[in-house]
Image 1 (tube, rainbow, N blue to C red):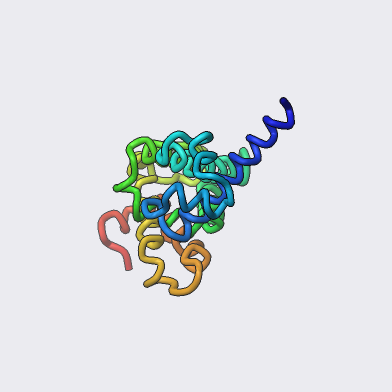
Image 2: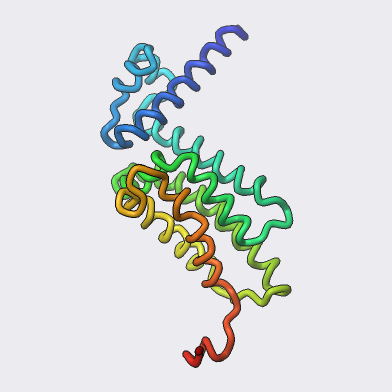
Length: 204
């Protein structure tokens, strides 16, 4: 029984790993379960034995990737993480999944509702980390008090813009490796305290 359970676990992991690679290469919408079975060298029925529908397989892959990213952002930033730590770790993690995540972003509006919910839940976890970091910094640095939903959506929108258009901003290379530090620097200026002169448009 134990041997059979281990075989099932290994087959499931093989399906998830193969699906991830094909989704990354061909796209989430274009990849069929038969393609995954062929690439994994297993029967089509084996795929459905583990994932009764294609949507469930897609959700599982997104959840695996998202859980890894969210966990690493939390662990990598540490308990005394700053907002910059959270954003930097987020970029670093996304860089490792860049091609897949870019597909996820560009095809997101056309994905099943359940798959989109998984993505939103992942982003919510990271937003919480950012909110906690900003809250710790405000008493010390006087960071601006801004609604976290708008703050995080601004950050995600910035990342997604560069990911979707990565062929323009970084042809043939990782756009997050190239632009990531600059995006973090820019975003931090949005949450930094401003002088009265800046607020009134009376800067130099």
